[in-house]
Length: 133
Image (cartoon, rainbow, N blue to C red; front, side, top):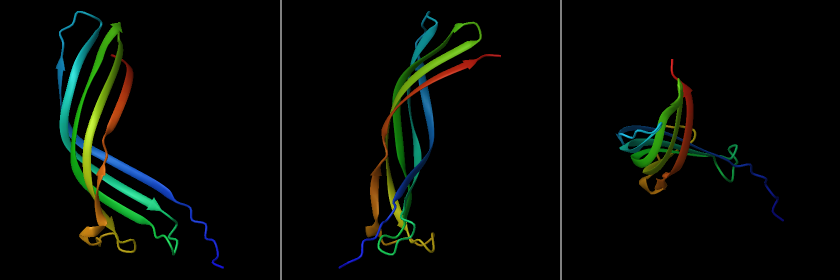
């Protein structure tokens, strides 16, 4: 009989992007001014699958860069004196090539067969409140 082994798996995906955006704003007479936003840049991703260095399932770490494009719309303005409000919705497309690192030496890469494309796109909705001074 084979003994059972309990493995705790914790996954962590960290991303950081560098992008440039352009806004096209409508010259609206309302308190809230709508706009369109679009941009692009690069995205860095780090995927860690931590298994507490189990002998059967070693901890895996993969990192990589890829392009990122985004588009969205929003509205901002100041409906009352010194109060700033905003809301924005964005869609992002990004695809990074992740290459897995060998655990004892984090600078040694596995062969090219141990890499893969990660689709890191998504939808985001953001609201903001602030005061002008």
